[in-house]
Length: 281
Image (cartoon, rainbow, N blue to C red; front, side):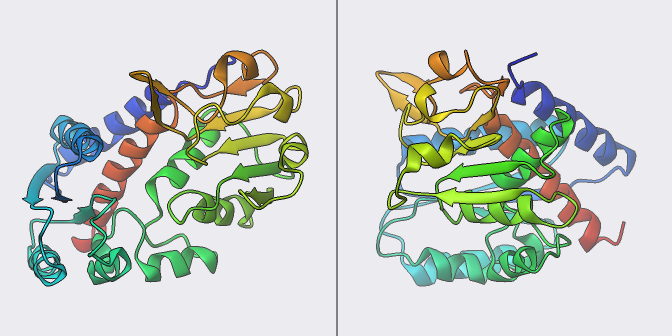
């Protein structure tokens, strides 16, 4: 099947998490901190809370005004760090310009950093140690490839985008010993970007520009993973021109229904892993 069904894969992971939580008669907790009135962030948080309820994870929803001070936010994070019923803490991004995102992420208990953004967790990943928390979208992509039986070993993988959330951690995951991909990361300053993309056996688009990847940038038979979520004329589209690229790709993820559901499934699985570690299960 050409279409890689991220929703079906995510549903399987969520069912596995739900079954394990029920078997241990556990009640993991996930806290969300949302600052200001941002419709997109509001939608993401609602989806995550609904998924929590479905698998048996308690959600703690904290809404703060746009003008909240950095000190108040840090105090709220510290409160959640101390709360024994909370196993994961999410600070929904983006944050207002007067807030230092790096400082907030570093303030989260490293064991509760289910987003995988804490400097210690990022450092572990770069050292080849995957025992810490790993960013949800990159890990979700790895799980999607594995469960779709798409090997990355020896393959040339091109990642379009170098963000701290997707591009950088995903590159680290793919090149780890045991996965053994040859990884190139391209970005806005890359020369001959289209030619580099066309070399890829596996092309991963995470640049945040609607339909940026055209059929002229994709090798015949390549696997194409679209991380982008863009709203154009009221419709969700990815970073890949799906209609054209689908014709030449061997496999491709749709938007919606591809990487997005895997991100949420991985977040909930990370929360469950945090609970198990904190309770020595």
